[in-house]
Image (spheres, rainbow, N blue to C red):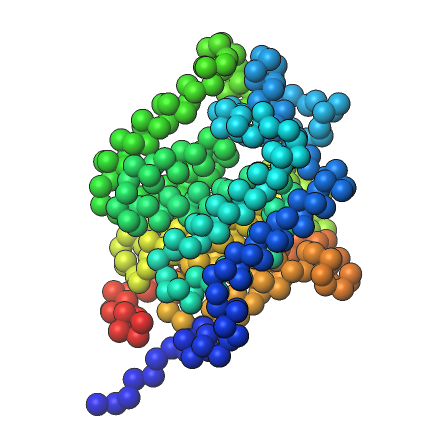
Length: 399
């Protein structure tokens, strides 16, 4: 019988065993996550750069005093409050704390929940710590802005993890917590299409959706709540929040064109994005390649960031998490190593001050943060659309 040549491993056990023992200990990664977060907490206090936390904190006060949520309050903070009308209720436990304590709990809790979600991924223990190391820098980039993105990434992972564990109630709960923070976070709930107990999941989604939608009524009147929903939808669909971190922004930057909310480039990118999403879902259902549930989950985490007009640099913790988790689920090939390297270097490292200024300038000016994520998305697209059932059988034997 001829000898079968297996794919080259991304991180084989033999390589992992040659790494220093401290590198492989979960405690090492945990300590680094929290030390990094603590340093950024101290930096935020020293520089007074925690505007997003003040926005979240003030939203509860505005709701409590029946003030409009979606107006500018330049005397308190800059930028708009862009989140779901239910979010101030969810944030209330932190909003009532003193600012310093609230910010500490918020940042540490964000890092802790993110790390907890990574520990729940259905991969071998050695791959879990590799995933944690690969995502460390991107997490700290996101933590620095004190936004909701690390928590969103964790909740989106936990949605799929609980679907995978046949726990539709918890999956629905995490789906709707995502929705009541940033509406688009619920997109990972689409993975339910590939699992059993669909009606149970949808029933819990309906329950949590109704409860969460009317939850602000504990503070607001029905008329105020309707107005809040109207103002929120108007704001998130307006060009006011047009950012330049998406694929569309990268294309405009490379062509030296000004950002536009419409135009032929924007419409073409949107059409291609939705066509790709529909085809990925269809072929995943048709072909059922190895680990297709998680490749679809990674695809959705990438897609919702790459083609979102509100995407900015800290949002990429969601995309990079989906990319790394998906790549580590796939059969181990050299291409995966290359893509993981590009993610760490171009997406996570180049936009920071840790690289020479000329590299940072090119990465920022041309919005290259999106490029490796787009390449991973296309790789996932190819894998879902062109991997046949026979190929899947061979992959299972190789694994």
